[in-house]
Each structure stands twice: as structure tokens, then as C-alpha cells.
Length: 209
Image (cartoon, rainbow, N blue to C red; front, side, top):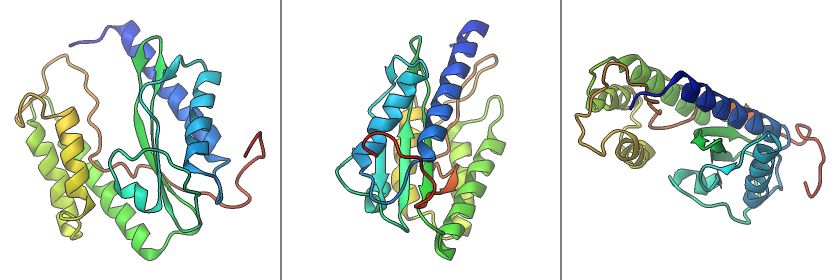
């Protein structure tokens, strides 16, 4: 399906709205806040910026929960030295955006930094592999090849890559190809595209926060 210029513009505005909502909430994330609080604040900010609703149930997953592809927000309170996964999307005029971000509360350890570098390199390799007519399997192989170099190909990547590849690329077979004139978002199998820090002084008080 080829989107019209007007549709592309609306999708772009939905993406920008989503990004701005995330930026607002990021400033206020701190230890002690519940996953449920973060989810509620994200959806509040989306609507304040003009979204009709979230495009899907917002995923907020801290600590061990961040290893689950589709975790639901809980009463778990964020703690220092935890990874926090945020999967969010806004619906604007019927067009949905979707992005995943991972942040770290406190100074990241050497292991976390190494994992970040591995995932970023894999993501960029996957993006670089996308060409008109490229089979989705080749894009997947490019990312796996990088993670194999870091000995991460048999860890959490296997679980998440399966979900993302099925959802976005393989509904009609693993050899689905791009078509001339088509516009398709190719997500990173693992989305550690933001490596932020949140600490005690990185928020502004508001409401129940």
C-alpha cells in the first residue's frame, strides 16, 4: 500500500507527537515511581499534545520485566540501576505511531554499555541492509550476524526477534520483499535506541509524582 503525501504527513505528526510525549515524561522518571504511573503519565501527555488515544496499551517494563516482549505495567516501583523499557504509540487522526525506548536509571555498568553498543551496531546493520527488493530474512540475518559476534545471538534477541519479525515482516512469509513505491517502517528487532539516564534530580514535581 502506498501512502499519499497527506497521509505521510499525518503519520509524521503522529510520530513527532509520540516523541514529544516521551521527552516530557523522561524528565520526570525517577526511582520510586511505579510502572503504572509512568504509563498513565505517557498517555496523559499524548492527549495533551492532541492525540485521540494511545495506539495500543502502553508497555512499561522495569528490571526483570524488561526482558518480556509484551509486559503490562504493574505496581512495581522503579529502582536505581534498572533498565526501563517503554513501548508507546499515539493515535492521531486515525494514524498510529509506535516506538520503543530503553533507559537506565543511574550510571550504567560496563556490561550494560557493552550490550547497548552491540544492539546499536546490530540495528544499524539491519537498516543498512534494507534495499528495494530485499528479503526480510536478509535484514534479519544482518542483525543476527552482529549479535553473534558479541555472543548475544542466543539470549534475549532470540525471543524478541521472533516477535518483531513475525509481527512486522513475516506475516506473508519470511521472503517478503519491499516493492517499488512502497513505504514501510523497518523496526529494529531489539530497540535500545535511546540510552538515557534518570536520577533523583532529573524530574519536576507534578501531581501524584
